[in-house]
Image 1 (cartoon, rainbow, N blue to C red):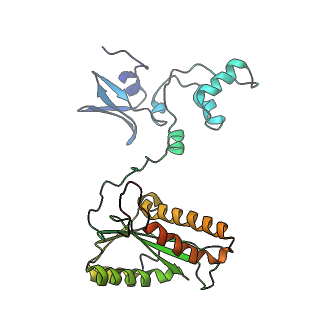
Image 2: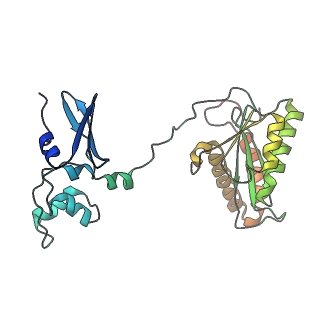
Image 3: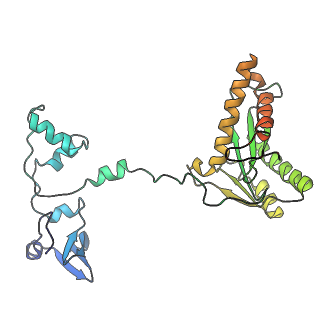
Length: 284
């Protein structure tokens, strides 16, 4: 018999209290009045109860002043900290009664759970130029350029890392610039981008742009909601460009209103400098 790490529940006790116990395969269900209070799964010859708050209603051993009650009263503080407070006597009238129920607070699990980290690298890497294009819009900037621009949009080739930057007065101009980029690639290189990847900004989901992409046979991939990490290539490029732009403006002692010209210069330089881990430049 395996070592026990908790209490045993008597089926006879449950049925005497009006509960129904149903065994089916490796599952056991404890019900009452068409409501399932708890379930258990067979493990090494015993049925292990899946502990939850509702399951505690069918168990004996939980006391009115036990650690579970004090855990709820004190804002779901760590039970070990509460026990230490009781041991040291730092709180008046704190008396924790013995409790034989072992459980994990479901409220704490739901409130403190975090999302699994996203992969650091993309599982798919393009091998041909213009197969995959990353795009993102940055702005609005605090200062307007002499040309009236407050945004900029990047179009980054996944294979070569080459970036094309467009200055925008409004986000709605994104559709026009994407069409301009596609036509430029078709004329200059005789290729049509296969995939354009972006976040879920409204400027990318415009019906006019979607119809144009369908007509050109281009697939539009959008990141999951509230997940900018999926468009990380474009996000990092925007960060590098803005950092370089600020450095150039500070070094030249020029006002911030010339950020647009400095940004285009920064992108021109980055296209002609080797990318990380590469021996040739994006321009080459």
